[in-house]
Length: 243
Image 1 (tube, rainbow, N blue to C red):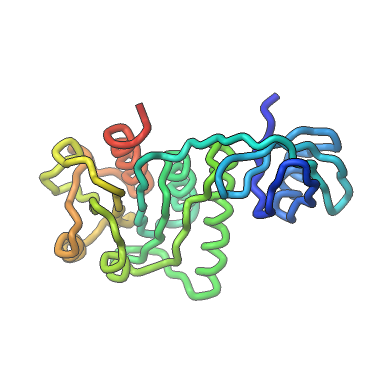
Image 2 (spheres, rainbow, N blue to C red):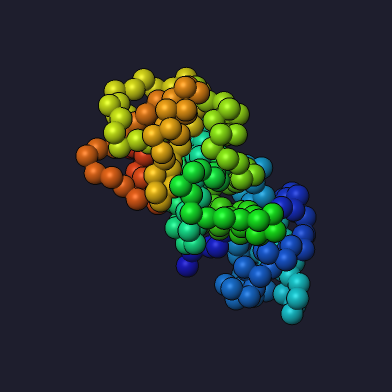
């Protein structure tokens, strides 16, 4: 049986006994139905992970004894910043989940002209908390021990001025360049994916003026939830750790 991996923001040290935080407790006890004596793997996002054993399970709390540290690292050697225009409902969840599995280091949700999602401040906060939980769950599943950074929601205009990357790419089905024609970046990659209605011509022209390179992924137009994942996969295969 596979030992479950569970994230906790708690400080972890071999030999200590910790009380699981609420989210870790819900995942371990209420979802996975782990019991006293069951083994699990704990990580807190600072790198590496720890063997652990549940030593006490009660109705509303549980404790675990922290065991050996395992210096496991599966982070990509190429940091990828995903600027993803927000899509509706589960499409955004799917994109974030799979982007984490594919190794992105940062995710920036974006509003653009054709973005069909409208969020007030209250709803925006709830969505950010939800997306953070999607990221953590994806890390638990795929073996990552560092949590990709989720940025605040920005407009495309704000992000194009702030983003710092040695190679900045904007997916554009009309572009001449493909990834095969580009040079491996020195430091990191920023990748812009448009919304369900696509980026406008004016938006593409503006991001290019801000240092982005238009890039196509072949002759077919991909949906927003497909485009980013296809691009990240290709980038990782060319310059990262998918081989």
